[in-house]
Length: 485
Image 1 (cartoon, rainbow, N blue to C red):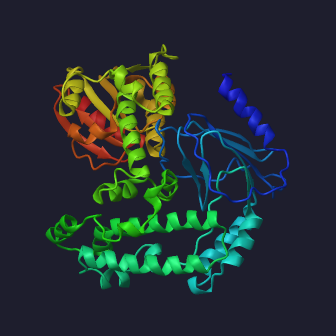
Image 2: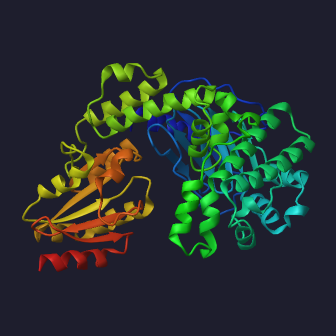
């Protein structure tokens, strides 16, 4: 058992200790460092026979390593522990609630399933105009108790239907809007929500953070301009949609009235949804790169470029690495050290990418297997269907290998390096990691930016078939058998 696993187990035991005081809400101090953040959780309404491991969570959370949390559970005691190896803030998204994590945080969570279901029912079934903040807070406090978080996410305030996914009548009403008209629709709603915020009894810290979230919601809606044209099959003509796409811009005359980019902590607002592209693109479009948050995004992008090289086991310029902020250097060097370690198993082989441009990689990889049928599996460590497909194919892999099928696995640098190394050891075949930003340059046949994605090549190296999504081991075996015969 390694040191980190031992620490994690001890932390899981610590989660059993009762906690009594709720941490007061305050904006966090963001200390730039690379230190794991920990969530210690427990179910407080357990009944005999309950076997819950941990609340469901989702999302490809944004971290420099692209890593997943290390999870320890005790289904008998009803405790769960998440350890995130991070070097900047990350939001852990449970289903229906979130915890904001900063490097070094230890957060305790008491979770009441039944009370949380009551909270969700009230939030979903009560008409939006009838929901009160006080009632939401009352139900929330019964459902979830958080101690030690740098900032407990505030409860939602009233939004119009735009928040709920663009109902058909709304999309129809705004289908013909120009990007300028759409921006004013979004801005009008933003101002309405700010007025609601001003009417709430909030601390200055709560108000500042809630304002950041509202601003990010405004940015998201601006970015949904073409989406609002495309849903409900309203856009029958691809040329019309292309016209709207060309029209779109984040350039905004209202930019001086926003605040999130004026402080590095505005990054918290950019974590509201899956990623923070809208916030970063807005900064770039409005010439705000020299703002505090704009400068930090630039530093992060530089670190991501170097990390992608390290994760793909490509040479990294030492001067370029040393120029990065120390917390980024720590994580990149950890990945480099891991990939230099000798493989723990002898099933799969870690392979370096061929020399040449990205569009040359796949043909060169396939060319190494002339005389064999090649089965290429595009996957990621965070993709459940991908992992399921790899596991189920093991039942027929030996038989197919004996009949001349070679297995090639390709992931990108969004995968967790620790998990990738472990999975390579379990699955025979050639394993590659490609830089995420180069993947689309590979010109993968019939690839639509979705995984798992499978390719079959014949014994002469000729492309035969692409299969998108895991369709079952028998289907895959049958497709490969066609080429064997």
